[in-house]
Length: 198
Image 1 (cartoon, rainbow, N blue to C red):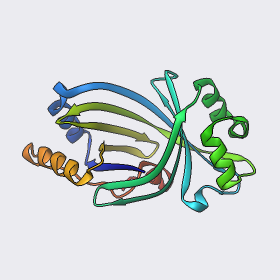
Image 2 (tube, helix red, strand yellow):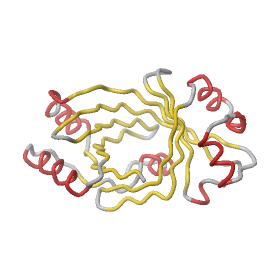
Image 3 (cartoon, helix red, strand yellow):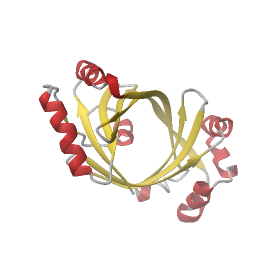
Image 4 (cartoon, rainbow, N blue to C red):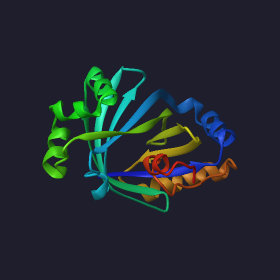
């Protein structure tokens, strides 16, 4: 179970303010490409699951993930997530031709076949994300700029075993610095599928 605090920033101005505020805590920045897949007959989405292939910084790293039963309440997301490394060239081949997923031998794809039994796979498309990573007061903060065809979403994420305490720390930081924010109400995948920003 992945548990994350998710706070939405209204625009690029506030995103820039957070980036500047946290600049001395910056660890790295990743350019991510996210691609999503379903079974040919919607076998995964019918059970509130999605398969994602994510590339980091071109083809420096590739991760395949199975996410299921996401719940997002008051800025805290809880989702069943399983992920593993995938050879980037294999990931690219699957993006090019989703049917290649049937040939991928991995623990995740074994689960997908066993639990969902898809006859084939379809690509749902995807979006890019620039993620700044910051180590601040014992928390790993991820500052996201997600680029969809219909607009850009700005968000702070923080995975935590104590999401309420982490959320309070982040909210206090934002309030002290007069940075506007709100609780995220939908996952990036849900926003991508809806075709519009919330």
